Image 1 (cartoon, rainbow, N blue to C red):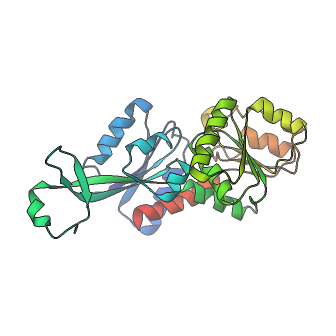
Image 2 (cartoon, rainbow, N blue to C red; image 1 turned 180 degrees about the vertical axis):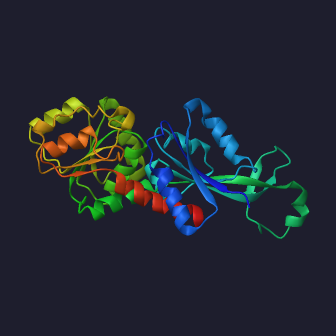
Image 3 (tube, one colour; image 1 turned 60 degrees about the vertical axis):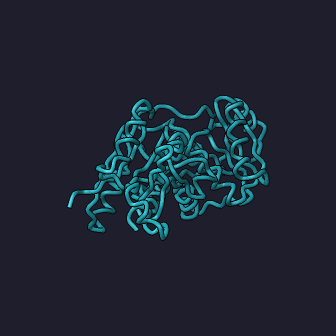
Length: 302
């Protein structure tokens, strides 16, 4: 029996621990599966999707990382509720389905195996096609990470640096857990404002969101605005950007604030190093990686 495949797609992906983690899960379960990371450039994303949707492809699912967690949605047939809520996908399940070709326009209508009593009458128009369903397991992974590290979100002032797919998942998690205020910080305040408008359209406006650029955030720190948790959801600090971090000054940040970096490789980013030096509690993204991965693996293999 040929080996079925799971993939991680993004750019870059060389730093990722997902292949070693998932291949260990596969080994423990004794499954005929293999997980591989594929560095996909933006110009090659269409070709990747066409390739894995081919019936001959051994791929049964894949993870999505930066910078495609939002863009991937346009390629999917369905979204689970959490993906709809966040507007971000990090896990895709490929489902083989029987569908019927619409003879009037050539489109395919997805059907179940036993979609109706008249199936035999349409047998000549039935073909097997692949359906792609997107999930967001980042929300689960983030909330589990917060729980096991003793961090409470309810009624807290949360700062999220970044406006990409990871930031969407974190903002959704903080909304679900009833944060008091959520500050979205971006290099461009207008980008943060647009992020908030889109987020509220999915979640509602029962929680206050405040857009900021980094200058405004640093000024708020100087003015002693109360923040409880600050979260780096940008790529700054990853292995290929290890000397970089978001544009904040930890010397002015209260030591009672918890600093979280969703990056897990390196274990201690410049952001976390500066936070630790300042006396802040620090958490990296490894626990989030592990628990979102466990949930994704169950989706693919159950």
